[in-house]
Amino acid sequence: MNRFELSCNIIKVHNMKHLKEVAAEVKLKSGFSMPIIGLGTWQLKGNECVGTIKTAFQLGYRHFDTAISYGNEEEIGKALGGVDRESIFITSKVPPIDLKYEDVITSCRQSLERLKTNYLDLLLIHWPNDEIPIKNTFSAFKKLVDQKIIRSFGVSNYTIERLETELPIAKDMGLVISANQVEYHPGLNQEDLLDYCVNKDIALVAYSPLGRGDILAESVLGEIGQNYSKTKVQVSLRWLTQKGIVAIPKSSSKQHLKENLDIFDFSLTDEEIEIIDDLGNSQRLINPELF
Ligand code: NAP
Image (cartoon, rainbow, N blue to C red; front, side):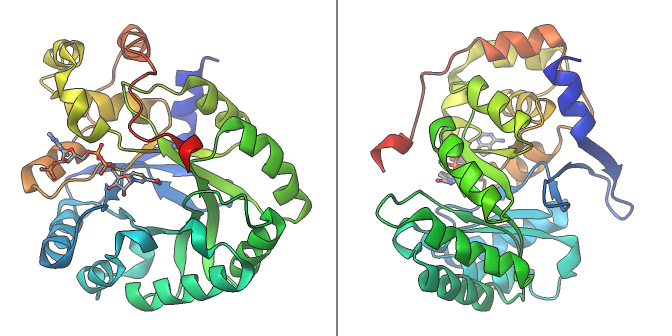
C-alpha cells in the first residue's frame, strides 16, 4: 500500500446533510475526529474576525484554528456563540512563555473563558521551550486531558528530533500526542516529517498551507488545475489533504473561503502528486530552530 492509499484510509468523507459542501475528517490517536480543512485565524482581529468566522461557519467550516498569541479568542467565542458546540472543532495553542505547569492550566482556563466553551478539541504547545522541563509541561496537559477540559493534546513546530526525544516521555506519562502542526505547503514538502508522523499515528496539520500566498507564483499548479477547472490554491489544498494532511488556510474573503473548501469533488493522480512533491522543500517561511 503506498502512502496515498494509506492517507485515503484515514480520511472519512461524509456529506453534511444540511449543507451542500462535502467535508472530510482525520481520526486522531485520541479517538476524536478532526475536519481535514480548518480556518486559520492568525491576524484576524476585531469585527473582521467575528464576521469572517460567521461567514466561514455558514459556508460549512467546522474547524477553527486559533492561539492565545493571536489575541482573537474572544472574537471567535463571540462569533460561534449559539452554535452547537459538538458540531465544531476548536484548536488553541499555549505560548512557550506559559509552559510551566500552573501557567498551562491558567492559560487554558482563560482560553475557555474567552472562547465561551467548557472544553477545547485540541490544545497545542505552540512552540517548544527548552528552559522548562518537558515533564512539568506534559503533566499539566495530562491533567487537562484527564479532566476532559481538552479532548486532544498536540504540539506545534516539532521536528523529528524533538519528537524522538519527547514521545517516549509522553508515553511513559500516559499522554497521547495526537497532532503536530507545522509549516507545510508545495514549497516546503516535509516528506520525512510526514512519514515519521504517519508511522507514529500523529496527525500532521499544515500551517501556512498556501505559503501565505507564495504558491500562487507556481505555474505547474495552474497547469494541473486546468485538468479539473480548479485554482492553484485548490490544487495545493487537495495535494495536502490527499496525503492525509490537515490544512488550515487563512482567508477573510468570502470567495476565497468558499474556494478553499471546494476541494472534495476531484482527485489528483499519483503522477500529479509526485510533480507537486518534487517542487521542493526550501521555501520555508518560519524556521522552528530559531525559536
Ligand atoms: P496561509 O493560510 O498559507 O495564507 C494566507 C494568505 O493566503 C492570505 O493572504 C489570504 O488572503 C490568502 N488566500 C487565502 N485563500 C486564498 C485563495 N483561495 N486565493 C488566493 N489567496 C488566498 O497563511 P497563514 O495565515 O500563515 O497560515 C494559516 C494558519 O496557520 C494561520 O492563520 C494560523 O492559524 C496557522 N499558523 C500557525 C503557526 C504555528 O506556529 N503553529 C504559524 C503560522 C500560522 P485573503 O485573506 O485575502 O484570502
